[in-house]
Every structure is written in C-alpha cells, then in structure tokens.
Image 1 (tube, protein in one colour):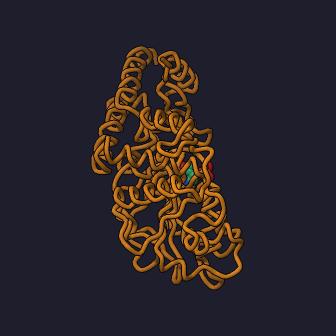
Image 2 (tube, rainbow, N blue to C red; image 1 turned 90 degrees about the vertical axis):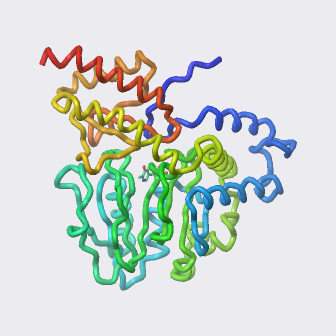
Image 3 (spheres, rainbow, N blue to C red; image 1 turned 90 degrees about the horizontal axis):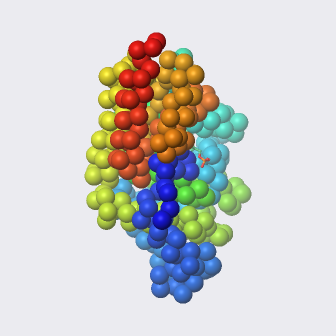
Length: 366
Ligand SMILES: *Cc1c(COP(=O)(O)O)cnc(C)c1O
C-alpha cells in the first residue's frame, strides 16, 4: 500500500491511479510486446499501434473533423510559442495576441522577438483577473493568426466562449484545460497543449493543426520546428516521446471508457470547481477570489486570504491533511488549487472542508 496525498500541483500534476498502474505494468512489459514501453523502437508495430490509438482516441473525444492533423511534439508549450510565429507569421503580417495572463504574455513576447506582433487585448491593468468583452478586442487588419490562452493556469482565468476573429485563423493554447471539456475544433487553426497538466506527463505536446495552414510554412525552417515536415512524417521525423504518447493514450482511454467522454468530464469538473467557488462566494471577505466571477477557471481556483501569515498557516494546515502544492504562483500569491480531470471529488471536498473550518477558526479574530 502506498500513501497517496491529494496533489493540487499546477503541473506536472495528478494522474488517475488506474493510468499510473497501467503505465507501471507497461514499464515492465507493454501488453503483447514482450518488452517494456521504454525499450521498444518507435518504428515497431507495438508502438505504431499505441500512436494510432492515441490519435484515434483524441479524434473521437474532441470530435476532430477531417482536414486536421494531430502532431505529438517535444519542447513543451513553450516551444509552440516559438514555432507558431516561425511557421505562420509572414514578413508583411502581424500576429494578434489576446493577453489574459502570464502564459499569453509569454507567447506574445516570443512572437514579438520573431516578427511583428500586436496586443489585441490586455488584461494587465486589472492584474489579469478577467476576460475581454468581444467589443474590446482589437484585431489588426491583416493578422496571420489570433492567439489566446483558453485557461490561464497561474491567474485561474478561463474562457467560456470562443473569441470571434472572423476569418483570421484562431490559435489556442489549451495546455491546462485540454480534454477537460469539449471544444469545437473546427473553429480553430491550431489547438495545442503540453500533456503534463491535464493529459499525461511532461515531454509531449499535442498540436492539432488545420492542414491548410501547413501550406503557409516557409521553406528552410529547422526540420524539428517545421509543422509541415512533422505532419508529413506523422511526428516520426526523429524519435518521438514514446512514453509520453503512451501515457496520453492511456489518459484518453480513461476519459472515454471510465469517465464517459468530455461532456461527462466537463460536468464533473464543474461540480468540483463549484465546491470551492461556493466557499469563496459565501466568505468573500475572507477568501478573496482572484478571478472575476464570469471569468473563473474550472481547473485552477485562485484566491488570497486576509494576510500572508494566514495564507502560510492555511498551507501548513492543508499539508497536515495531506493536501499538497496549494501555494499560489509567486506572481499572484495566495492559494491556487489545481483541480484537473484526475483530481478526485473527495480531494476537492477535503479542501472545501478545510476552508470552512479554517474560516470558522480565524474569521472572528480579525
Ligand atoms: C504550463 C503552461 C505552458 C508552458 O508549458 P511547458 O510545457 O512548460 O512549456 C504554456 N501555457 C499554459 C497555459 C500552461 O499552463
């Protein structure tokens, strides 16, 4: 028996126990392969089957229409920040960025380094606590694409609609809410997500790209950074992150067969997040939520408390109950509860109970 804590880490993050057990078994022997998933060739039949299954399950879960390729790349979402402008931003074009938090800002800065980039909306003045209104987003005249961050992991701000950029290809960083709910892939040029938040382990990034966009890729990019070449080689230009793709496949399998698909997953996530937001709303003088109500994330719930001393005490009390990694990112402070797909409801309930008790204990003294 092992003593597993409730892990609220923002990433790498909690995984379903069932997936960990399957991965554990496959480290010894991938079923049917007679060898470990860590030992087999990426050109072998057993791996080809894993790779195909990962793509098939993603297509099913996300209802990815024809005309899109699924790539499994390395370098994390941070490398996507660079690959996007390298592949899609032409010399006389501008790339538009909607900035709702730290990750969007990072993506923008990378585009700015590599070409002409425009801030279509910036939430900085309000400390990235809310989403834009459609009328306030200013797209540039000939934007190559519009980039936004579906869920800002650090601030805990999540889109609940898709920005309408007209005919400009929409690019979405969905790293921290990938597979947490259905999305309408047809509305996007590119959807990308590193796996280690909600879809597996560090080392693999899923990139879903509309094939039309591959025609824009300039010649002579370094091959590893070339979407077209990666698509032509089905992510096998070099050795792909074999184990990462395997775990992603297991996660998809769990989502499909144990959870019942992304609509069911979304309901569970709403339900879990609701438990914490209920406390923030009931005791808003004590637990001050970072995100405005209409912009709240279902994945990362962020709040401040009356003092840093109380926050430290709260974290200590949490740890004593085996609730770990709740410290907010240094740029926001306070508490951040990352409650991804694999966080069981019982973990969120345990945190909710602590919040209620802690409030009862400390609110009166203030
Ligand atoms: C974690 C994260 C990233 C960065 O991912 P890496 O794989 O570490 O490069 C980018 N965007 C969002 C929204 C994230 O949560």
